[in-house]
Image 1 (spheres, rainbow, N blue to C red):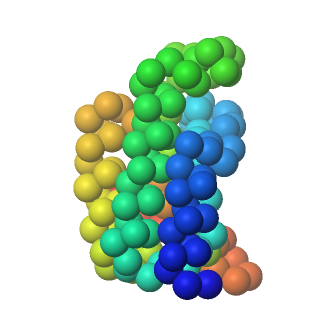
Image 2: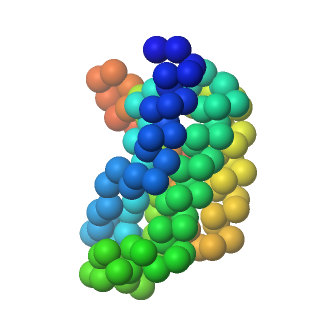
Length: 126
């Protein structure tokens, strides 16, 4: 898939929350963001990732989640980025910045790496 097609696909998903769940272990409302594409370090991919995080944070902070899911109102929130491979260095740097910014809003962030046969959680310094 070329970068242009990949960018178009990412832009199509900017306002989409992939999954909303309640983590019964932590009590958190979890918004899952799926990143199915390979990390290519492109400006377009990083911009798309940043725009998606902005949409997720807005969904949480602007009251949309409370309206759509009143059962999750008042719960601490976590955004979980699920990706097939470890993010490249540029993506990791951006994710670190995003982590720090949303932590100011008391929103946690977690990156989950799904390798071919196993699933591991990546601290990634976040």
